[in-house]
Length: 113
Length: 267
Image 1 (spheres, chains in turn yellow, red):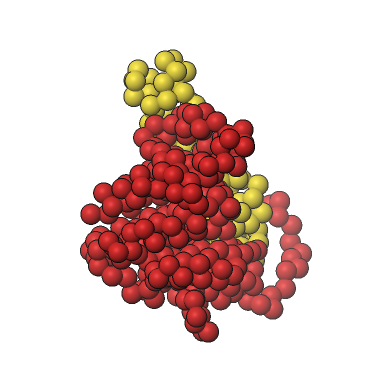
Image 2 (cartoon, each protein chain N blue to C red; image 1 turned 90 degrees about the vertical axis):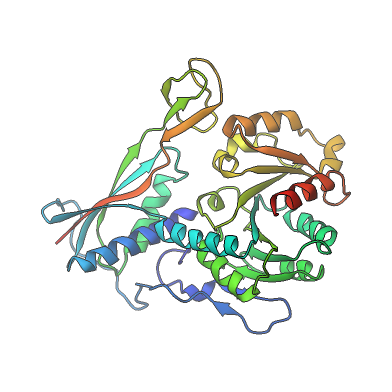
């Protein structure tokens, strides 16, 4: 359940930056979370609600952009959509691939009053 | 970090202690934003739009704080020529036994130190201490992984020697430790043949971030359904560059290959 410590990190980072912006309140936090980031969205949302209590982000909405996994096949130079880390290239069936997208775990922006 | 519920769990839940020590230290240097006596009753509804305020763009990696400190650890290890390994596995795969046997075999050639991660107990640290290696136990309380701050403080308290090997035995868990860089040179994943040979598919992230996979307890292969070739194939599908060593830490088979790998990489 590392999502809890991830949620606490998100709230820590955003609260610190929001204070620098003299925010009275954080309305929402927007995240990019890749399909292969190892994060369970439900657990993150659950943890987020707990982590925001009595902080500037209390009551803030968590908006999550799911980033689709994209990979590149080093054997046949094709790009393809990847849903898990053991997917072979759909064109040549090779596993020698490079993951280009899908590992994201980033705070994109937050909205404050 | 507060891993339980994000609310009212003090940092003091994480403790660091050496065997034979009565006192222990805590992680201190981060802010906690919880009030113990807060009330949670809100009368406002949450379905109104919150988008009327001001939006601040940040583009920050959530794990930035952990990653920055991990890089500091890495720099410290490199400067002192310390070869740091992050050992990860399910609970019971044999990490501590592997370490006991490894340290006993190499301690005359190279200085070894260990950071032991477990939620509770000093048991593993005491086993390691019996080998003569310097060891510190990190009890994460309810936390499911070590983070770079625990390793940073543990390394300081161990007063690591130049040209040594630091083994970081992570909390037994194939999920969470995969995401937390500690500053190690390599992650080494240990799987025992009493587990399923499809673990690399079930927990792909851990296998994708590890450089070496030790298949342990091979002396039990005649009694279990574990298919070594299949396990390797699954792991290579996740990580084509992963290397394997088959070993039995208790019986000694394959241990020399692991020792050779260690000594070759730690120079």
